[in-house]
Image (cartoon, rainbow, N blue to C red; front, side):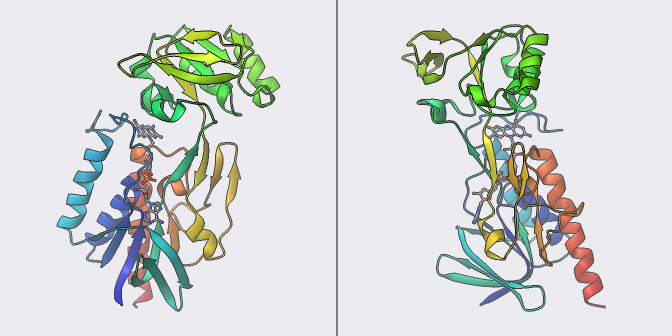
Length: 302
Ligand SMILES: Cc1cc2nc3c(=O)[nH]c(=O)nc-3n(C[C@H](O)[C@H](O)[C@H](O)COP(=O)(O)OP(=O)(O)OC[C@H]3O[C@@H](n4cnc5c(N)ncnc54)[C@H](O)[C@@H]3O)c2cc1C
């Protein structure tokens, strides 16, 4: 069974940055990734200093090359089980292969759970978007529909109203529209359509063109804003006895400022521990955790 000082599970920006920080300190690192980063469907990543507008998958490809250049062992696959403790060491299973490590970094990201609306998956990340910082500039001044489907929907309407005067709130799940949300929409004079959404519709070239409401009426737009429920990919953490924390946006693994979880020897970085972390913040948390683990291993060896 192959042994590493640190095994990093998940190879998005958080896991790659953690691996690089550790490998540059001469630590033996295995990074295991199944290759499903959260922003796969987006063509460009924004708010990336020095790499503005990069293709998300290209960015990770460059990250893998950088990690490999420092000696990180990169393995494709899904970690199906994680067991052990800080004192006994940890065991990780990927397909039929088993590895051991002294420390674990969970960089497994999160799942965006979208409302069940026909066509939404198809448009997700291109014309159905969630984040004003990721995509807002690209849809500025466009005709935008906000699908009211969660506690953050009215806040999204407020964010996008800053970027376009042409915003309509479609009250898809009326129970989710709080009094606070109603006052935001009222203060900003955002019109509300009290109908649920049946489907997103596309023209012959595949471009999103409208939403169809329950009453069969069509509302034309260039972009749809939708709030996902964000669930940290945390099955492995739970299998060690870890408990998840709740946030209005979803569920996450609570950590300290270095990324250490409540389970000794186990760290969580990126979206797994911070639902709002964008690419640079996810990478920064990975670097911090890598440095913290290196320091921990140094003092443990004294
Ligand atoms: C549509 C969309 C557009 C976005 N656009 C932007 C943008 O423009 N700018 C920006 O800064 N942010 C953007 N984001 C946010 C960005 O996606 C996240 O900040 C970033 O992906 C978080 O990185 P991460 O490493 O934590 O997780 P991820 O990038 O999701 O990586 C997690 C990795 O872990 C792997 N994994 C999970 N479980 C296992 C397992 N058991 N075994 C092995 N591997 C596993 C996954 O397959 C994945 O490869 C966007 C998000 C979405 C949804």
